Length: 191
Length: 115
Ligand SMILES: Nc1nc2c(ncn2[C@@H]2O[C@H](COP(=O)(O)OP(=O)(O)O)[C@@H](O)[C@H]2O)c(=O)[nH]1
Ligand SMILES: [Mg+2]
Image (cartoon, rainbow over all chains, first blue to last red; front, side, top):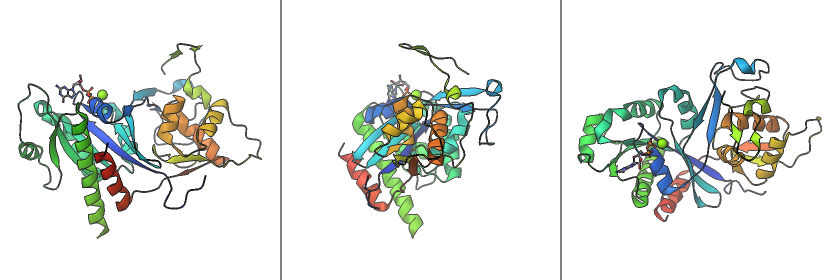
C-alpha cells in the first residue's frame, strides 16, 4: 500500500467513563456500531512482561468485555470509542486505554454523582482532556450544568453538558464537545 | 481461566494455549489503536506463522488497528498482542501510529456533526 506521509491512516481513541449503569454502553451504541472486544489478562505477573512459557495453569486470568465502537469519518480516519470497565479490579486497564487517548467523556448521573469521582480524578491526574456529560435519566431531578460543575469541583475550563445518551443527536453533541475541547487543549499546549 | 465453548465447533482451544502461556511478546506494548499492516515479506528464519497469524496476515493487507484485529478474529487483546509481536519480530507486519494534528481534529469535528 502506498500512503504518503499525510495519507497515513489515522485512528483516534475516545474513552467513555463513569459509574456502573450511567449509560456508557448506551452512548457507544447510540453513535456507533458496537463490536465485540474482550481482553484476557494474566493478573499474577503484571508488569514483568516478556516471554514465559511454563506454568500457565498457575496464573490467574481475567476476562473483561469492553464496549467498543468505531465511527468512520472518512477512509483512513477512524474514531474508536472504548467504554472503560467499571469495576475497580480493572483499573490496570485504564493506563493502557488512556495511553494516547484524544480525550474522555465522563458520564454522570445526578442521583449518584460521586460514582464519577474516580474517573475525574484519574483523568485530571493523567492530564487526559475530558468533559463531564450529565445523563438525564427520567425521574431524576434536573440540575443545571453549572450546579454539577460546582458539586464536582471542576476546573472552569472543563466543559459540562447535559445529555440523553439514548438519543443519537445528543450522543453526537457529546462527542463534538469533547473533540472541540481536546482541540483547544492541543492548541494551547502548542503555544 | 474460563473454559469456553464455540457453539458450532464444540470446545475450543483456550486462547493462552495458542501462545504457549506467554503474556507479552518481545518488543513494545501495542497500543489498541496502533495500525498493523502486512509487509508482504517472506520469512527466511524458518518461522512459520500459525493459523491465527495467517488470519491476521490476510486481514492486515490493508492497515487495521490492533483493536479491530482482536474484534475481527474474536480473540482476546492480550492474545492478539502476542501473536502480533511474533509477526513483528519476523518483519511480517509493520506497526505504526499517526498522531492527531489540529487539521485532523477539525476534520473529526465536522465529520461527527455530519453523522
Ligand atoms: N431513562 C433513561 N435510561 C437510560 C439512559 N441512559 C441509559 N439508560 C438505561 O440505563 C441502563 C444502564 O445503561 P448502560 O448504558 O448499560 O450503562 P453502563 O453500565 O454505563 O454501560 C440501561 O437499561 C439503559 O437503557 C437515559 O438517558 N435515560
Ligand atoms: Mg455497560
